[in-house]
Length: 389
Ligand SMILES: Nc1nc2c(ncn2[C@@H]2O[C@H](COP(=O)(O)OP(=O)(O)OP(=O)(O)O)[C@@H](O)[C@H]2O)c(=O)[nH]1
Image (cartoon, rainbow, N blue to C red; front, side, top):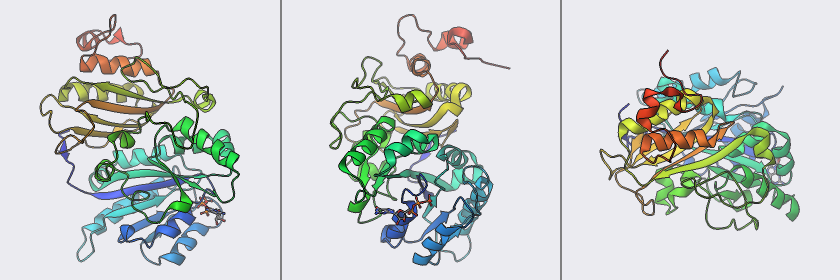
């Protein structure tokens, strides 16, 4: 798959997720008239007997809102969502129709975003028509800590988020808010957490979570990658261990907040190398990673220094075994250091397996570790790895 230009801008899609009652519809209703969302189509669905959400949203905007049948967006309605998104993409090209630039999908509170994201990155029509702008996860500030403790889907919603909107700060005690922030940070090290009461527009919240918009705002690429910040969280005065490692030589923090992680086996880790990586090596790494552990990868993002064209970084974005067609940036973002950096959010996946595989393909081979040739000649060099039939 040849890299395409990142400027070939298809329709930007925002996935708005969050547990039941977290405040997704309230947020959407507040922002739907924002000029940044003009011309956007909104797709909503509601789990339960009565489809209340579409009515609420339609009360604010009578057009551009498409409601799906009752049922969970990640399972029963997924086909319907795909059909709807395909129809919207076709309508974009239809005669006389205004070009559609953006779609916001509000999921049911019980949805695991993984299958929806995979559909976006695997369906041929959707892959061509849509780019994921971002996953925005709404968390109830008053009850978030308990919800995250109790519900695996809510943890996955937070783990894969690019932005987290914290609602109900007006109802929450400072201790409850702090507990919610801590629970969020245990699952997601760096997605910006925005207090809903401070939000005045959609830009940077429902719009502009992608790489180019992040850089245009002057944010560090680490924000988009979701790498842990070296700066302490302004609202969190303790250290964390998110299983993040840089070059495998140290971890950040040692405080034990691992109960969610242990329970779900969700881990985030970053891989990094200064060496330019060939196209063959990076695609080989990704193919084997996807072939062996694709379903365990909740999300993967990265920027790659290609040996063939080191000045134009390759941008990677994948979920659950599917990689969005890689795009190229015209130049390295300031502060990115020209380094290849990948961040993997995975579930039940051994970090050392991914790290060894990455090292084998990118040349950073540790002592006593199989290099790429050795792996290709002897698939058993890495446990669990198999080639051929
Ligand atoms: N006090 C307060 N109430 C809020 C806030 N945000 C949402 N609510 C209320 O919380 C309730 C649930 O909000 P919704 O926006 O319907 O939540 P949702 O995430 O769309 O809920 P589901 O569709 O059930 O998943 C509503 O009664 C809202 O008015 C907030 O910041 N403060």
